[in-house]
Image (tube, rainbow, N blue to C red; front, side):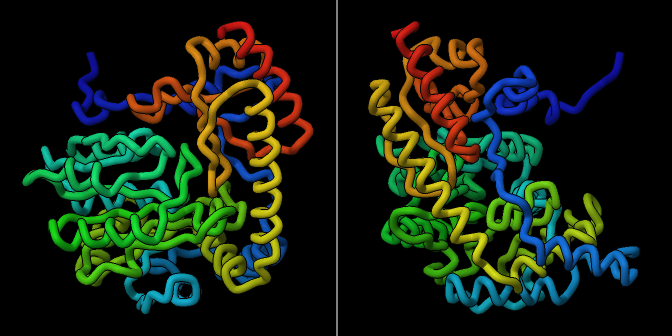
Length: 373
């Protein structure tokens, strides 16, 4: 009989993936967060050029090629006003690995990590894999992260808390006042604020702020990624940055788990960061139109939904049985409890699909709602 680690027995396959993989081939998939835009041509071309020139044949530096890290640092200086040294950036295999190395480097056995509930599924699982204990903090009624709930959850055993804006699964965007509070909490309590900013460019209402802009100590580590910023999910290229000491510890994890991010993907991400950003504006405008279409449809159906201010997710309140009825009718949505106990009574809808399919899905959701209400 095989023996498995207690850590791996504490986690299971993501509820998002379970729903997705159970779907029929002709189902309308509103489950996965996959932008339906092509990767920018100049990013693809940068990878092809690197391959043809033989630049992608060997390992890169553990942290990633210097020119990519310089492009990442320039991006954060321009967007957040953060004076970021390229030496304090690690290119990773997507934002997922960035989250993993950050938690592994900062969480000891039994340490607590405060996570938003509902929140992205990886926060809970990666905390457990690091030997830590996830501590769910409920969101406000509008699904924004509540700094007071975060602070109330902090104990002597807290190693870190996670914030995410724009948010998955909620689409909520934290205000400047809330983000300043996240930084203050990290500074005053001497705990790590792990800020997941992978949807940074997809903001419809308000602006994106990072706790890194306001922290007075080295209490913040930022995770970001080319995946959602530039529709490069398959390239698996993200990054993590923080202070010298924090990056050095995260690098210890990264070098043994990954060695380095994929070289072609690094050149592609550099191309995206240095090239024309027109695709970013195009994507954001398109997602905002789809959000408005979805909210109008929810209103006609009778579903209550806090207005998403960013990303491409909505989280309406739904009656019991609604998710199963949708799936049975060929529209894939994810039950809210897949993202935490406080997600129960909600469903997560990804509207990163074309408008004609969204309209068709709304018709089906209306039928499902009538069947269970």
